[in-house]
Amino acid sequence: MDGAGSPSCLHLRLMGEFRLVYGTEAVDLCPNAQRLLAFVGLRTCVSRTVLAGTLWPNATEAHARGSLRSALCKLPRGERAPVTCCSDTVSLTESVTVDARVLASTALRVVQSAGARGSEPVPAVLYGDGELLPGWEDDWVLFERERLRQLRLHALEVLAHGLAREGRHALALKTALTSVRTEPLRESAHRAVVAAHLAEGNMREAVRHYVAFWRLLDEELGVPPSALFARQLQSGAAGRHARSPVVTGAAARFRTAAPPRSSSASCE
Image (tube, rainbow, N blue to C red; front, side):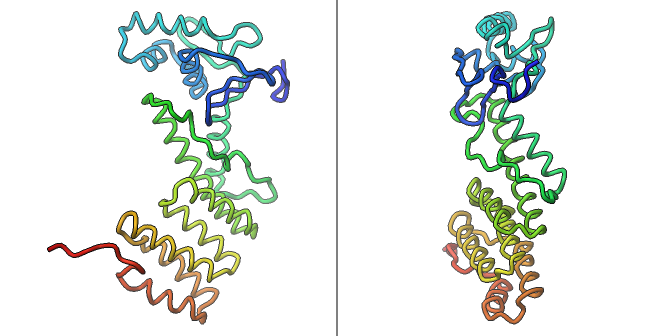
C-alpha cells in the first residue's frame, strides 16, 4: 500500500479552491462529482440516503438517488478511486488525505492539550489563510465552514497562550495576530495578543494594543472591551510595572465608564 508521502496518493484540497490531486496531477471533476467528494471528504463515511438528500434537497428521493449514481460514475476508478461504495454507504478511501480534516484534527489536538507543546514544532496548518470552499453556498458547506473557522480560531488562541507561558514570545505573538487578522473584532484573539506582550514584559505594547482595540470596538460596535480584558491588563500592570506612569494613567482610564473615543450620541 502506498504511504502518505507516495506520489500515487490522492490529496483532496477543500481549503480554498476545490482540487483533487493524484501525485502532482490535478484530476478534473464535474460540479456534482466535486460536491459529492467534498461532502464525503468531510464526513469520511456517509449513507447513500443522507448523501442524496443533502446534495439534492429539492429533488424527489428517486431523482436524488439517480443523481447520486450519476455523480459516483463520474469519479475516477481503479487506483485513483477516491471513494468506495457499499450497498448503503459511500466512504473515503484510506489513501486520500483531506486538508480540511488535517486542519480540524490539528486544531482539536491543540485545544485538547491546552496549548502545551514543549519543544514540539508549531503546527503550520493553523496559519493558513484559506477558508473552506469559498463561493460554495450549500447549507452544509456554510455549517462546516463556520465550524472549521471557530475551531481554528480557538486553537490559535490556545496555542498563543501556551507559547507565551513557555517563553516563546515571538511565536506567541505571531499566532495571536494570525487570529486577529482572521477575525479583527474577536476580543479573545486580542486578549491573546496582550497576553503575549505581558509575558515578554512589554507593557507599553500591551497598553497600546488594548487602547487600539477599544477604539476599534467603539467605532464598529459602539461598545467597550469586556471587564475581563481590563482586568487582564490591570493584573499585568500590578504584577510587573505597577509604578510605570504609562500603566498608571491607562489603569485610571480603564476604571472609568467612558471609552477613549465615544461614538455614541444622546437621543433627542
